[in-house]
Length: 321
Ligand code: ADP
Ligand code: MG
Image (tube, rainbow, N blue to C red):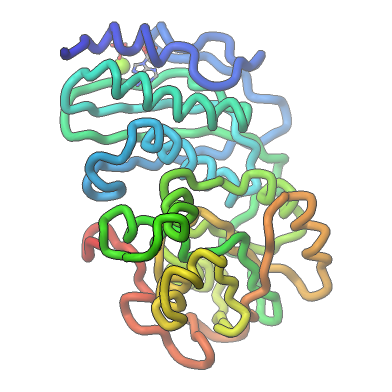
């Protein structure tokens, strides 16, 4: 049965995430009131996901709630910002209370984990879409940008890119392997782990940073363009999860590691000589060096320009995956 907008907000969306002292007024008025800490800059980002475009039709509501916050937390991570407040705009085909309850639970769990308070939003009817706007703090001048990589810096990534794309393929029925092999890959798509702790330890250490949403080559290309450098990737250094290696042949997995999207890992530039092992321990995630930034422009893998699909990733307006 359809439930009204106000009842949905009141029942499920009013006190989501962490309780924070710097939220003076949360959901319920015409706008939220928050108090930014003195001396810190605010990092602001927004990201929306649309059913059938960014996630498959029928993905569990709790996963949609997790994902829409996770992709925004990932933007905070990529800037080295500490996430604090979020706004949620939900567009729902019909007011299904069960769906919103499960969605809210998925979002709430991840928001609490990262100390984020949901302070407001908007709810309308239409094709299923969830959009979050997030705000976080960063000490003045210390945000990680895409622009600082220089020739000679090392290219590093967190985690094991390619897993989420393999998981999405499995969800869509286009990757066939035993269920116990596919399960961890599907989990990487359903529940990305935004690397917020890594972003914080990279402040003052990494020279440039980006999060991987469109695919490794595509996002590395964006960082190169912003920094005015080239990137030379050595494919023998690319990490591959055990599940990915078990699920597909080496060539297919190479394509996914380089071109698959939705990983929400961080890719960053380190000057030579940084102790990445200690960064990895502090952040609780594996870090792998995959190549070197050089003078010039564009991305090469083993000296060759990757084919168009790998280089462009998922471009919403030119190509559907
Ligand atoms: P208005 O008519 O002033 O825009 P709304 O009726 O849209 O107010 O919203 C009422 C309150 O509920 C506001 O505080 C708003 O921030 C909050 N709200 C609406 N939708 C959501 C949502 N999806 N998630 C969180 N808060 C929401
Ligand atoms: Mg409103």
